[in-house]
Image 1 (cartoon, rainbow, N blue to C red):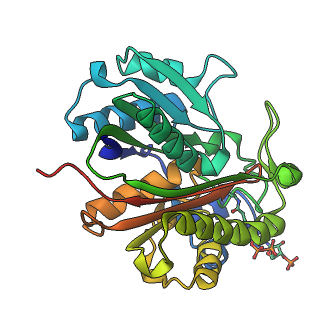
Image 2: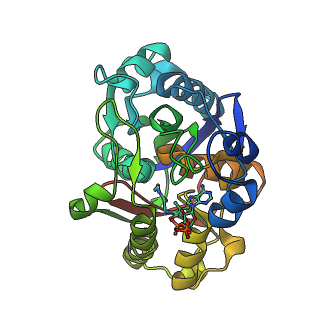
Length: 311
Ligand code: UT7
């Protein structure tokens, strides 16, 4: 039986770049503080979910060498849909010329991995091709007067085409989790701005990353030594460092774009993954660990074998 594998990928970032020095003109902060406490130097802002998703989705289909008529389902992971309804996926579906179902999925920053696992189930259920997009426009819901949050977030999108064409399974193990008891530590009300207890999110994030990664690796029957590259949610370099330490992983095995994107929520993992592909850091056969956490609190991890179509 053929299995789902990633056959196309692309990202999109809005043109406008906001540096730490730009933010230091808006709130009482410094470039040094932001870099030391988060690892972020700049971020892109000014995107909408529908625009960014459309650009990334179009480019991912081009990489896969397929057209809109080939896609059987659009999954759009986002927590910043442009409207209450219709779903942003409905708007993106039309913009891309797709003729298939379209679903928004909200698992906040864990959304891309939730979407990947979900897409693989649809492929196992009989679909041939799913377009999965992770896209968030956090700048629009950021409180630009709150130095405790505004230094962290940015906008972006990343997309993959998942096709039922692999000879071996590429999704080897996964873990999805949600702990609604922590819903109040990171949230945004309708029409409101992001509210966050940064210290508590940090503490829980390190544990959630460790748990999700461990569960996914256990289910895949692999250990951290087998993982060629980890693609962590890009929220804070210190969260990544702390969770890597607990997992016994060296930092040189992390895909990183955080310094130039900030935290882009559901877009962060595909942005880091595509950056690593472009940099030649991912080779056919490599085992990748995708792991993230976010509001909810949600967490998610997946171990995949990189199995792109051979040229
Ligand atoms: O996708 C999930 C999204 N969220 C996250 O991942 C957030 C997780 N949390 C974090 O990343 C960190 O907690 C922050 C980066 C938000 C904050 O870093 P921290 O090391 O936990 O700092 P802190 O909140 O303990 O604040 C330390 C000091 C405080 O001053 P005092 O009380 O020691 O005098 C803050 O008022 O730093 C101050 N501070 C700042 N100073 C300069 C807080 N924000 C800033 C700032 N610039 N932007």
